[in-house]
Image (cartoon, rainbow, N blue to C red):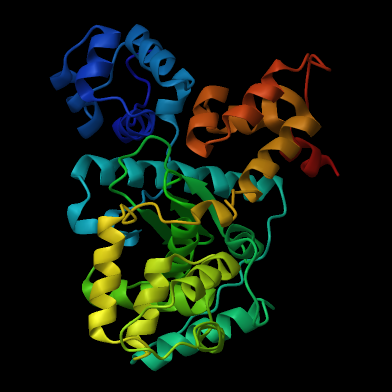
Length: 377
């Protein structure tokens, strides 16, 4: 490389944020200052020396020419449906949007290599709570889910064409995130309980179905997404049949626990639905929330271990297929994106899969890329 090489500072910023490395830390690692790294990231007029480019590439697990390849249109904050947007740290939001940008680039590339499920998310305009409930019912029907419990929420949205992954080490203050360009992407906080993760998937599904092109994060859109997720996971008729008690003084915790285990939805969400439908009184609703707080169930509830923990499948299986079929080059995708295996593992949260493929002996000195194969066929 020479000083005439094109250097996209944004590429440096994106890779650094995905790696979770601060300006100070990357500066110290490569022997320069925080201020100089900041200038590299924010101006096109600064082009580092060849040796600095190689040092940055080494520390960030990318190839040196990664910095000279246009990433495309970056994901902006206003495109993302953030949970708890107002309380989320700016640094965490930036890391999330950086991850979403590079993941979107990876998925666009994967589309050239593999046939992924067709995107099949309905779109609904809503004007009332009844519209939200109807949208959830329609969505279940379109996806052929019937009226029973949903066994695996991640599989449901992946079958509808979404890519699901996790945040990695991003702050726990980010509950979940979704974007919808050509293909929906949902990022989850894997540290949460299974029931809450399922609710988060339903919540982000709601944003994709109800709020495409609409900036979310306000009370109205968040309330609509919560309502959609709750009805989608636990239809109204099942709620009414599962909670038969009409006592104005005593909550039927056994019925609530049974509903949770059967339908995979948190007890707090069930309590809220019961209150919203007038099945339990305001006093019972207040008492229930005090109970959650006193028993330490605001984050993790009783019987969480009875709800299955859903895992992303589409993206890991796609990478596994490429690795098993084409070896350590993953069919050429690493070269095409100019990234190293460790970066791919961090971006996609597939460390075990990537390490397993990289540990396999080479079967050929020259692995043909999938794109090259397709062009010749």
